[in-house]
Image 1: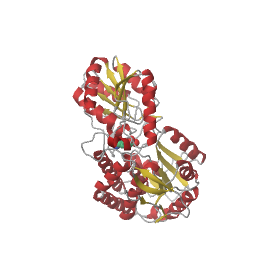
Image 2 (image 1 turned 180 degrees about the vertical axis):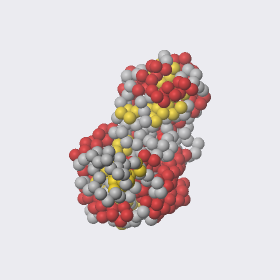
Image 3 (image 1 turned 90 degrees about the vertical axis):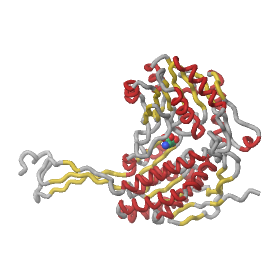
Image 4 (image 1 turned 180 degrees about the horizontal axis):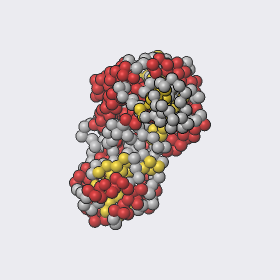
Length: 498
Ligand code: UN1
């Protein structure tokens, strides 16, 4: 008999609790359908209490020196290293990505927390000259207050950590709401912060639906900043709700990321990159390669090699290290991806895959074949984000057409070009409308010490990760220190001051 899933509460004021009369929901392993964890279906009242807790804890945390906050983060990173194997397996069990990727995203979390811990000794401001004598001008960074972090299910540990570690190092207190489908990963991350010494109330954890808990968090007047990663429709809604309260809303949304394959590319290298970019995480990354824009001269050879490889591409149990691709993350995802495959079948040519996998262990999970369509620019599958293992191949005549096609979508997160021509590579860096461009590497796999984010409908201009991660969570104060002991009027006295 399967054991009952572990029951998690909400973390408010440093106590894990289950509110009286709360209903629960379970997260499900997308490979097997088994319950992974049981969670509180939170209410607007729970959101309110979590914000109250963060609000009360703010002053003491803000006054904790940033290097000291950094020491706590380093301890969290150490604990996460200790738990890496277990947490990686939890990612795989709850979300379905293969174990190498589960471990990889926990490593990405550790990398980022360590990076932010170091930021505790930087948090640079500027010192600039004054137009007046005996006067200093400088800037300091200050925390915003209570921030809300709402994270998606596709990177259920690393995206929360991008948000939480950056928010905490800068002195904010946090209410974190994970995607419901991967709430256990969220809860386990939070427990490591607790164990690492983050004081009670500084990091709060609430579960429940976006429509109830999410909206209550976003609309609360005590919240100054909302950091959201997810789909573009929800992102737009979050933005509008936050805008009414004049909040900073940070959005990381979709992508329709192209790989451009030029006629002079190293095709073997590109093949590995396209396989990893398109079918890694079963295509459920906002950085996933969902379009292959390929020069007509190498098109037939490359597509032939790609489909050949896919015939030997093991799809199955993501905990088995020999598996290349696991299931998609949920029944909803399965439906959405299969709907897009049906849309593609109407106006595009299926080159490989296209079906739900059935029989044996497949019947218990949400397994879909890696799928390749030959399509034309302008078809729905060539332009809309599918968020699944579906690659659209588009044939082009030359570089100019490739760039035109690459840029003619609503998103602009990641992009890549395979070419041996150095001039063309630099031209592409200049030409591609995206927040990230890779040369001779796939569209996925960003490193935490660089900014992450995109242009157009991928967001609203902000970036996570990198040293700019702290901008999302800090206010800048300009400071003027006049040590002349007399009134000096800027713009009026500057010519005559002595
Ligand atoms: C995402 O899909 O939302 O660059 C994040 C990558 C990962 C992060 C992806 N480091 O693919």
